Length: 167
Image (cartoon, rainbow, N blue to C red; front, side, top):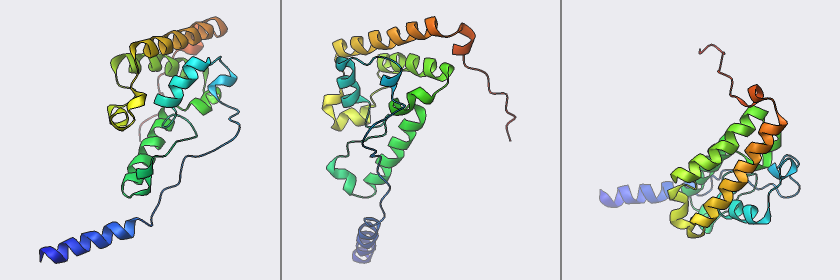
């Protein structure tokens, strides 16, 4: 009986290897990238590349284990959620309030240790941020906040309550 169960599990694992999610790879110009509206110094860009962009951009660097199911499904879902929350390559399309909120979240989440995710840094050890790297990201995000505060009326930077009725 145990052999039969193991055989069925093996067949299922083998079969799901052929069901693959799409990949988040969009090479080329990113016309709505954050760098099109705010300066992203090379020092910040290198930090974003190693710790953020795999989940928060339109270009993910996939590890070898992404070729094994169900791992690829987990990663695809993770990237989709990350991009939905905050996409550096779509930042220019956000409203002023959303831009302000997201750039504020960068500091909060890095400061609390919520980003990068511990599940990500477990394998991508280079994504663990040093205190100096955190300070660099904090200073950069604060400079963008100040630019936005000078650029936009204060009320346009505030999140509006959702007035849509819940159905």
